[in-house]
Length: 132
Ligand code: FES
Image 1: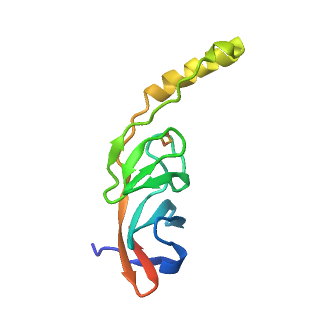
Image 2: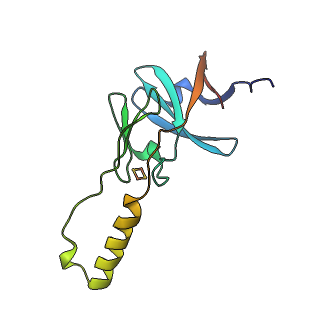
């Protein structure tokens, strides 16, 4: 079976150095990242609980998820650290809210976080192209 062709998804000047762009292609949500002039493409839904990674923070080649702080290597999609749940004193919350927070914490602690899918990127002139 022939491999799919590369498809243009953005223009180079739409994704400045250090920035991200969310795109959708064939039903997938993908983020394009420009790291020092080289482009990468990863699944834009965090493998933990689906937050949009492109709303996260980039430092060096690592993106930190905006929801619970899982970190991924942009160049490979590999997870480099698990989510970190914020710790705070829930004792001052109403009892029903405390119960909800404990339940949510138990659920979140059982969710595994995997590597992010990554995709082939090709730059041709001012076009950023992907192959899924
Ligand atoms: S959704 Fe990304 S770390 Fe939880």
